[in-house]
Image 1 (spheres, rainbow, N blue to C red):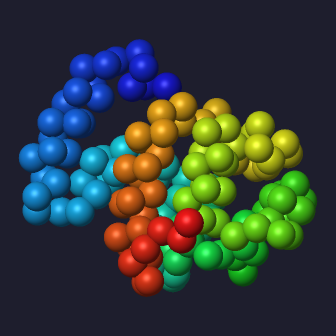
Image 2: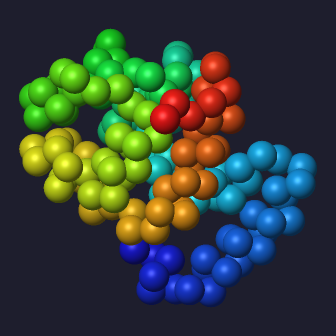
Length: 134
């Protein structure tokens, strides 16, 4: 992970995030989300599907259920009895291939609970309901 190799980058992001935090909720999460946006769009449901599905209205959605995106069979199976909430997303983002063996998400994961929490807080600001489901 870039931040572990380059702690100064994380320090700059933290300072920058703190500077914006008063003006914009979840500013640090928005900065941390940069690593996700190559594959995921978040702005609106009409967003172009990239390598991964868009994340608009993510919270409360069943994993593997977004119409118009071709999920792996593993993700569809994983999502049969779950919804994306803070707990499920935190676990998944720690290690997608470990949590859903066979997922198409080629990302090793985020080890820091704090970074995941910031990213989820940012995504919650884009959620129509404006909250992260527990």
